[in-house]
Image (cartoon, rainbow, N blue to C red):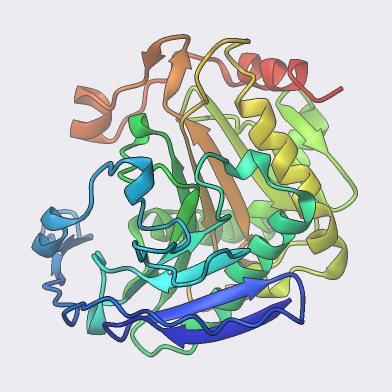
Amino acid sequence: MKKTVTTLADGRELIYYDSRDDVVREAADTRPLDAVSTSSEIRRDPLLGDSVAIASHRQGRIYHPPADECPLCPSREGRQSEIPEADYDVAVFENRFPSLAGDSGRCEVVCFTSDHDASFADLTEERAGLVLEAWTDRTAEFAGLPQVEQVFCFENRGAEIGVTLGHPHGQIYGYPFVTPRTELMLRSMAAHHAKTGGNLFDDVIAREEADGTRIVLATEHWIAFVPYAAHWPYEVHLHPRRRVPDLRDLDEGARTEFPQVYLELLRRFDRIFGPGEPPTPYISAWHQAPFGIPDREDFGLHLELFTIRRTSGKLKFLAGSESGMSVFINDVPPETAAQRLREVASQ
């Protein structure tokens, strides 16, 4: 992997990740851009104890532009984008409309490919591996920022999810606090250890393997299963078999095997609802240990992949119980979801 760091016309950082070492990235961003002005503010909810990012400047962000005006495509004669080069492998840049900025954290955009019409599932294993290296490198960089306590690498795919740009891309958030979802995991982890003396992540995986009905796929270095109490209609958790706190600690075997495993999961998601169906909308989210917490090594890095589509032509909406009280109601039994995800395996 070759990494090239440069800046955009308004001073934001841009990083190219290339598979070949002989690639030269010298194209300059000559757009007449004003300096980025953000109004991100973190406010604490006194009743729930969680944090909300107030980011009014995001109201003006680009929304579903036509393909020939996509800001994530490579630049071409007569039209410059966020990426000055005429082509690229993987590119990462600071978000022009960040939810978190300055003392409130950092947000970056990760472009998986220069092909506007592709999806992550269309990538080669080599390119998927390069994305993993980019995620890992960015996690390491964020770890050195004093305002960042937790790194979140994720992808939203599909207009139903709320994606505003159709180009295949993800994002990385560097939160200045530990997120509420992670706080709950840490609390459960501590309670489980106090009660059993064991590690929660290890014991969950062991239980799923012993039961077997919710296993989606299992390899030498990775295991994927639908969780026992899945919140979403089709939800898969992917864990490395050797527990590590974040992406930086994955061993070579897990890194080598990840592209094959992850691409297979994404391709199965697109086959859940049968031929002729539009691509399955999904969220893919890496859960990494926050920095500076006690017993950080006990946290289990894992990826959670889920869709809001519950059946053909119907979405799972977060209505009264889910949005009002955070109590999920799942229409698809986890065992049924796992069986379907096994049925649509690549031949």
